[in-house]
Image 1 (tube, rainbow, N blue to C red):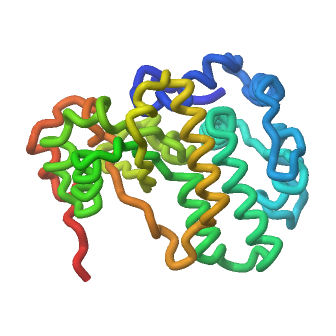
Image 2 (cartoon, one colour):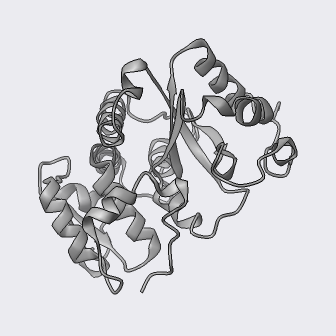
Image 3 (spheres, rainbow, N blue to C red):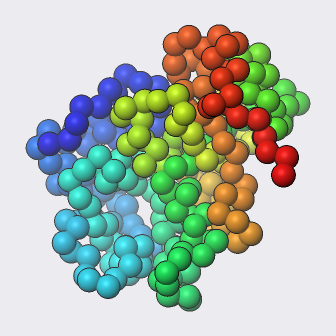
Length: 267
């Protein structure tokens, strides 16, 4: 049985609807998630139906991502890590499929090896620890992103807090990130991909926003691949409990804690 999850926390807004639709019993989630996957007609990059299967289904010596790409089967353990992984498949299937396709192609080209290499490292970081910062592409929205990238945390997250909800929102993607947040700590930090949008996005209902993000980010990943010049290329750090409204006590001193909100390195 999984540890308790506080579904009222805002960082679970991304996957809460998928959890509520699947309604898994407390003593096991694979069957309920497979029903949800069939209902959504989820498929891998080869067009095969997606199924969550026990970890023992993964043959010895076969890479996890290659197995998903070849069979549509997602080896799944009865733990929080794989629970959240399955929920992300049910929430953002297009992005998950794009990441798996990229990883499987890399494995087919270069093999597994002792290290993943920069492209697979970037895909793994995205899959495990990413958040999506969706920002209205106005001058104010672009200034917010500039402040975050420059690690001007006070300006971005305290002084700019009014932008969140109105012109910016954060969607968690990484399943390891969600697992860590079951026991929230101030230092938990996401690798964040910025997605600029126009006014039409913010007129959409939440479900339509999820679908838009899934489609647009999946298409972008398929078109651009993943940066090969470093595992964290293109990501911006964002402390999850620093997102305005996501934790109590977010006064100016909260963001002046340089053990968490660190200045940008200059070397």
